[in-house]
Image (cartoon, rainbow, N blue to C red):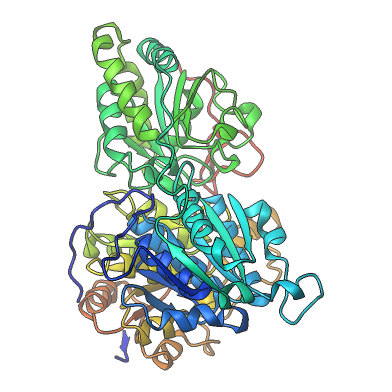
Length: 609
């Protein structure tokens, strides 16, 4: 172990992602200010305390106004994509709207990946971009890009503001829209002349006090769902990321315990029910646990909450859960029956619907079907097919072992982000997650480079928590420049690079489906004599503590050393073998009953008795 160079844990209160109108006693009810200052004042009064971004010509008036703010901390990132992912990490960790800011043209387009990521995972994000002067729009002016049109398919809404007087109302509406209903990204593009012009600022903006409440849940549909649950012999609760976004973890747990049904938690919902809970079967889907995958496949009732029946969960949709009646709870009506027909559709906030369902179910308890045979089947699967791994043949570290030790030594109060690839799946499988918002990753978009900036945002949102970015050597190289941001801004994240010297998931697919033809998947970062780059030296250059771990007997010491360093970021370069694979696995395009427990172990299950 090579060392070139402590954090405490504590609770953080959960917050709903709705605007907080903050009174400003020092300011008059109305005042004449520039549009740029109106941007800053509006953000302050909405309760925004942290913004991630990079200045540029068309957003410069707003950056100048930011210098006078006593309430907003701006974090200068090294790439706009990093700003977007940091705002996402902040939003997921805190439950509040994350805010990112950039200039026009390439500054705005560099945010598009993060906007797409936030849309796919329903992350509340407010993106503010500068735009060329309104009289220059449409002339191909320097650094002009029609970012409204570019982002229209990727946002809940995109605004273009050309008048200073419109800034407060649009920003307040955009902030509310990002955090309400099904959360997601909202873009506000503000021309430079709108930022420079003056306007009379009055607060709150017109219409801001009249916000719709939560959608009321249909008592008829709740009654129908309760009847289906009462007569089900093989029910499964299928919890998606919407349960996290709705802060409905306690209601989900209550329903699970009232019904006595098994629970599967998707990649986006990991932690929403503690892994230690006896009814938690783990993660379903392509790399889910065998009990979770087959429980859904054999169920006669699926209660889907805040989940969208993604193909990575269902496999071949025509073969998925053939005997299951579906109760589908989602705040977004577009998700209901989009992929799998919902026999009982419930369009409602997850927390409201789950609470109503619990109230309705309790009196029906004596009429329920006996679930003991169902649990015998599931317990047999848990005993026969636990998550595990084989020791690497090359003598290098097993990545699964490293992740297990990270989890055990960091404790249940730590927060974990992940990039995308094998390391992400190993982390989702082997971390012991005990609370919602403990696990932050890119699910729907699968964005490499997510982990480091997301960890930065999560650490700012919850400074008293240990925050680990579990990354792959491929993902890490896409956004590792944000280590400079962390070092310069005293954001002591911890990064564990699961370094298999390859684009690991690509290599796994090439091994399994492309006859071991490894086209352009080797990265040469791990155990080779010449590491390019050498992550220890790179991290040191960025002002971080840096350690390399290559032997199993050094793993615990390295993690404890990293946990003890709290004055700067820490990077662990964990050198693992490149032949380790993620198991179980459902090959793409087949039914979930064709799950593979290992490369040589194809499980072909028929109907359960």
